[in-house]
Image 1 (cartoon, rainbow, N blue to C red):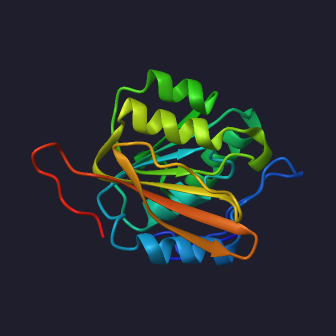
Image 2: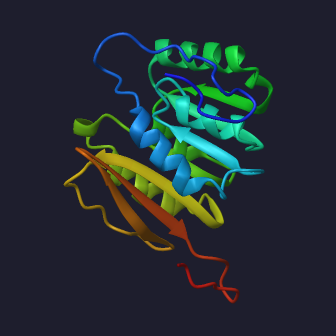
Image 3: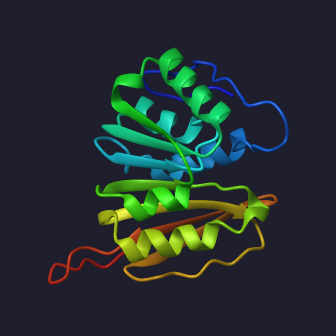
Length: 189
């Protein structure tokens, strides 16, 4: 697993051992960053269920201003810190050990881009999307990217709307976009 492009291009990231964490495949990661290429630079990123931290690290490498990584596992949090150090991006990141949904309940800041890639069978994806929309932690025109099994259909809680769902074999990516401020609504493509 390597950083695709940017300031940390080609740096190898360490992976967690065992089957509990499922890193995003290279094909899905490449497709994801082709989708987001114009929506990363200067943004604030939240990588929930961070695992190795590869998605947030890729964003930092591509010019995101800051990223927060959240994972409940101590070994994952330690690995994210190590990967941030290896890539030279630790000064633009915060790593939090704890339950991702509990973290959302206490969040006091807003983000432009949020990645959701919980364990597929844990039942955490839909509650996380609902909480993100309900707590309104996305900046206007913010984006949520959810990775899930290809056949799963996700709901679109306001103020977010499903922009598009992509399929990469057995893996699906649903991209949600938050509409702009009231009185200044912009139509989403």
